[in-house]
Image (cartoon, rainbow, N blue to C red; front, side, top):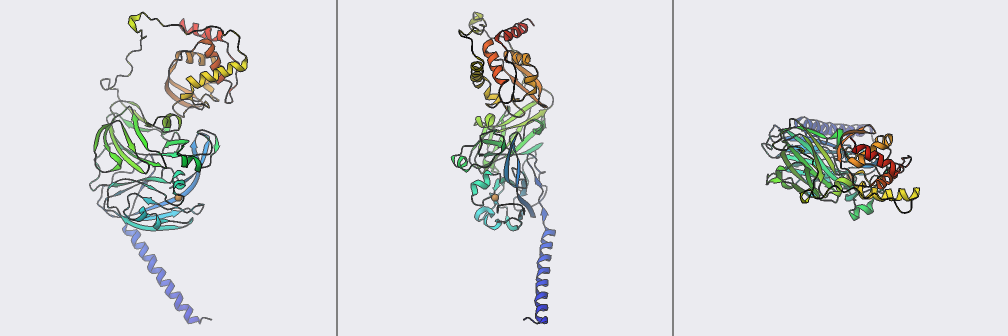
Length: 474
Ligand code: CU
């Protein structure tokens, strides 16, 4: 049994210690500058200050969200997004880092910041159970663009599920001023189903170990930087991209179609060590800073030039540049003439159009159409006819396709340029004309309009021939 007096003194001690800690914490919070986080593709403004005592608050959170159209994934995140927010601090900053793990998390998480000098980059000091907050401090000794990631076992799985982001440690005095800065982070995803397989897709450890990526994306999902979500710039501006690669596995051959990097800070270091670069390697767990001035209007396309990743796994992003043309720098198409090699002696030869010896059955026509589709169309419209959001329109359940079959035939014969509307989304790309005979066109259109949920009568080769003749007479 405790006496009443004894209890009271213990209570007093506890209360005074609590007050002491509480006040210390308050004082610390008051003295420190709160670091503003920015979410990709946005970058917070350059720092106009001296090295300071700063505070970073970051939350880990597990969320189910869109990985691609019709595909959901259970992401493990920093800040609720993939990539996590960009943390912008300054060389010499004394950083007090608070990592909170959301109470609804199923896993503990931590953070390894490559900008930290010290064991694990902060990992051991920041291991945090759901519903807890860990605090540790570090001094930013080295300027540069660094990756941060979760390093909780199994590390690969925490990274594969989306736990990475960038921390920029500005050199004292800052980087040279530019007009626009963007945050882009590439990463690869491994799902039970293949690319585009609809529904909720769980993580595949087997594919991750085999480095057999289903998705390679910029900023966390297919299409995160295309169409309406493309970033914008104006002719004459200088753009700086802070590009990170979260991996977990793949090295990026980062390239911008239609631009040349005027300056590259290779591997995210502070030395602008290369000029006039086409593609720059970005290792998993590494970064690069690239700068370029945009001279002409149009859409610049960010890709991983390991190119199947771009057109078949999602690694596409866009920068829409607006402003006046500069025909000296780039003319646009000036002419499209018939090319007649060998002095015009060779004339356009009609595509062989002979009748098959034995008429094909309905089933055989669809099989033939499928083969033609896979050889001529699937590279852009994809095997499953889903297209690539914002770039190549879908054929599966496409209102544009199914509303007007003669138009579809004309498109196959003559190609298509200019803006079209497909299922409420705008597309503006070039489809080349296809050198196919009337039988093949009727079969491939037959296949396309009777697969993936589409249904329509098969056109005959004679009907295609009529449409071709009408086109020729125009
Ligand atoms: Cu984690």
